[in-house]
Length: 124
Figure 1 (cartoon, one colour):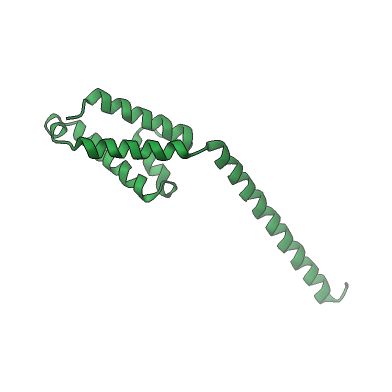
Figure 2 (figure 1 turned 135 degrees about the vertical axis):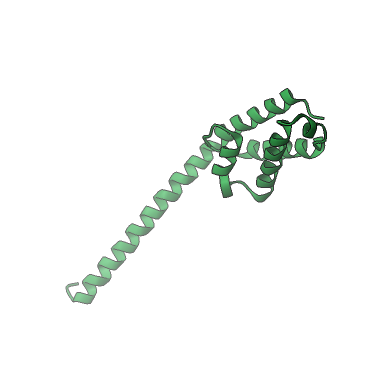
C-alpha cells in the first residue's frame, strides 16, 4: 500500500519538474501530460498513464490498498530520470536556431527564384 501523502508529494514533485524542465503549464498532472503529448517518448507516456491511473485509485481507499507499489514507483523513477536529462536552456537555443535556419533557407530559396525569374525574363 502506498501512503497517500507520499504519493501526493511525488505527484507535486513531478508536476514541478514538468513545468520547470519542459515548460508545461497546467493545473493538474493530467493536463500537463496531455500538453506534453508526443514531446514525451512512448515509455514516459506509458509511465504517465500508470501514474494517472494510480492517482485515480488513490482516491478510493479500498483500491489504494491493492495498488501495485512497484509499478507506480518505477513509473515515477522513469519520469524523473527522463526529466533530469532535459536541459530547458539548450531546448530554447535549439528552437531559436531552427527558426533562424528556416528563415535563412527560405531567403536563399527566394533569392534563387528571383534570380531565375530575372534570367528567364532576359534582363540579366
